[in-house]
Length: 160
Image 1 (cartoon, one colour):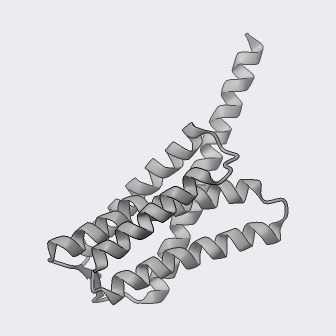
Image 2 (cartoon, rainbow, N blue to C red):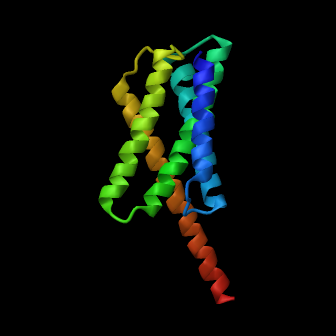
């Protein structure tokens, strides 16, 4: 049952991401997605396998749910957050986009706890809030870095 729920959420989120207006171009979205996917993969691996802060399920089907959440859902939510953050006109809307994205990510993590995909050992939900906030802020950092590099390239091309 968990796998069907995660596949449904993934399809709905990807469908929503395809149809939403994105002010960022494909390269910016792809770089944000790839960097956040790498960061989430490394964080989950280090926290679970090296530091034993939480345990990952041994069930094969539930592990597929973890992979969907870790490698597709979390990076896609951060890409959508970055697009809404760039589109927001005021600080209130930027904070609102951050809080909504954080709530979605925490709901996905709560679902993983409910289906016992993850079990806490030396971890709690507050650490999860900090970790997901870090993922969202890292998406903004990657976006700022990509925008800075793009600005430098445009200045260099203008001087030619």
